[in-house]
Amino acid sequence: MRLYEQKKWWKRALAIIALCIGIFSIWYTTKLVKQLSIEEEKKIKLWANATQSMAKAEGNIDFMLDIVTGNETIPIILTDGNNNIISYRNLDSIQAKDTAFLNDQLLEMKSEHEPIKIVYDAENDFYNLLYYKNSIVLTQLKAYPAIQLALIGFFAIMSYLALSSSRRAEQNQVWVGMSKETAHQLGTPISSLNEWINLLRETPKEEQGYLLDELQNDTKRLELITERFSKIGSEPILKEENMDLVVEKSMQYMKTRVSSLVNIHINIAKPGNWAKINVPLFDWVLENLSKNAIDAMNGKGELNINISHDTKFVYIDIHDTGKGIPKSKFNTVFKPGFTTKKRGWGLGLSLVKRIVEGYHKGKIFVRNSEAGKGTTFRIMLHVA
Ligand SMILES: Nc1ncnc2c1ncn2[C@@H]1O[C@H](COP(=O)(O)OP(=O)(O)OP(=O)(O)O)[C@@H](O)[C@H]1O
Ligand SMILES: [Mg+2]
Image 1 (cartoon, rainbow, N blue to C red):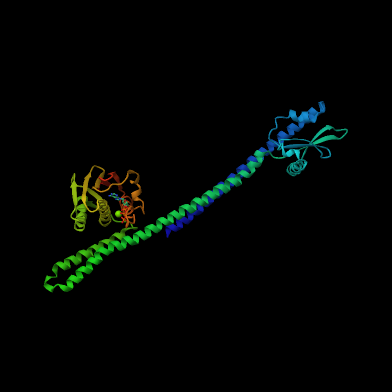
Image 2 (cartoon, rainbow, N blue to C red):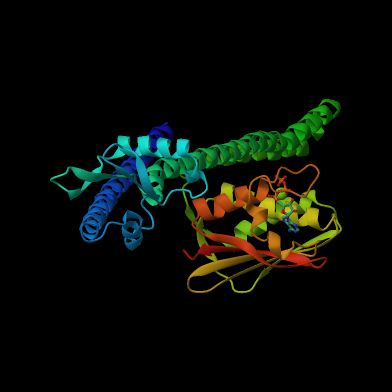
């Protein structure tokens, strides 16, 4: 519940930040546009003044406009007092041959800025009008924030959709996989219980003793499974344990369930490997890793577990003589949904990682692997 509340707040905060960035960007470009526009107006006025003073000395207007060659960006049209076009600058030279185009431009300029009056002879009321419009740079700059925001918005929406759909796919996989794992884990002890019950029916009362023990083994197994699932998602209680014994016990169970062609060895390099763990959860880790190892060996080979420690960590290396993992997949194997098996869900190792790193603050990784020779997974736990 709290997760969804938090998510809502995050979404809101992000939306507000995005809005602020948008507003700031628009405000800033508007400011720039205004400044640039003032600059352009100043330039035009300067040119108009230059033209005016040149005209007083000399009469050739085209020549004067040529003198003002500094203006290479701002489109201008010069008209006489009656709005007849005399000359122009910085307009598309081919289109400008067309009078209709020039008149359109003139209208546009009229709507954008007041013309600048260039007075040549005040007594005879002889003057020209200098019309101008924003330079292309300025026009583009005005449109820039809108285009930029539209692009960023589009990009943000697309990546949000892509991310949420991939997250949904991942969640689906975990849901389905978790249910399958539950059914799978419960399946074995339940079918074995059924078998014992059938046997019990056919066995005379005085010979039933060993059957009751077997029944109890299976109910214990069911209890363990319930405990495991109830531990996932809640804070597990960690206790100091001797890892030698934990591994020993867990492998004892594995040994009864694998073919006799798989040899399981436990090598304790240095006794006294104590770490703080939650036994039911850690059992699950060992079970998943050894199941994977046995799968990789196709039911035949050596499964070696080496346990050692230094001052900081207890190391548990699980080594098999199976088909190996390519180097490029060393990290990928831990991703939920990654599997190369026909009936696999790709959940085992993601669960293992979650238990080792999430619940025990340890580390797990592929220590090394060689195609056709085998793989070593290493678990590191803090020394207790
Ligand atoms: N010891 C190993 N040797 C070779 N490949 C391995 C080993 N352990 C894991 N892998 C590879 O990593 C993949 C993912 O393992 P993981 O345990 O997450 O899923 P899975 O075993 O395919 O399915 P699940 O465990 O959900 O039934 C496996 O399909 C396999 O390709
Ligand atoms: Mg597996």
